[in-house]
Image 1 (tube, one colour):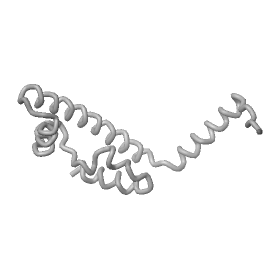
Image 2: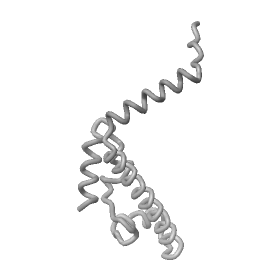
Image 3: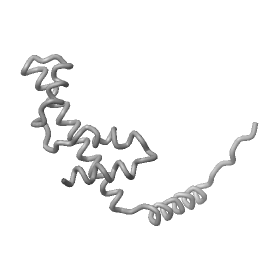
Image 4: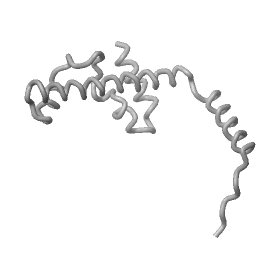
Length: 111
């Protein structure tokens, strides 16, 4: 059985530098900013949803299932109302169509 040779620090640094060069030339920075913005909005949305769910269960005496249904029915629990199809987990499900799905999410969130 052959073992791969050990990579030196210099080789690893060179590989990382070449990868960074590829990313700099191949990726539009606006795309990265949209990704970061969408991810942040989704993290905020999820946190607010979890807090609202816990509050509904504690203060209103709803079961977990009832609280979920109420959260789906009413949009007042969020600072930003994001349709479920544009949430991070949904948008990033299909990596092959990620640019198109992100563009659709960006357009929806800008409107």
